[in-house]
Image (cartoon, rainbow, N blue to C red):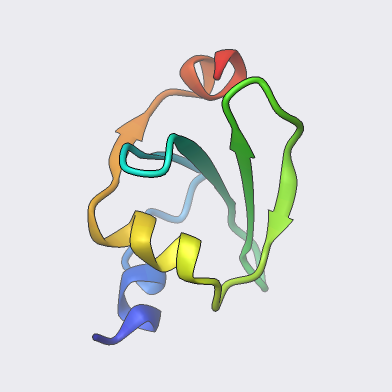
Length: 73
């Protein structure tokens, strides 16, 4: 599977996604070099490498969420 296609197909604005199988949320922060951040329920946000399995699993079956849902997670 071409994971760079999934990353490139994300909207150009900030996007929030939920991985339901791993109970984690991901935030994409667009820019010249896109950055990704993740957090577990009730945990602190951490930077996520763009080649990580967690990011690619989330992109395959993600549910888009709002900024408020992300903050409350």
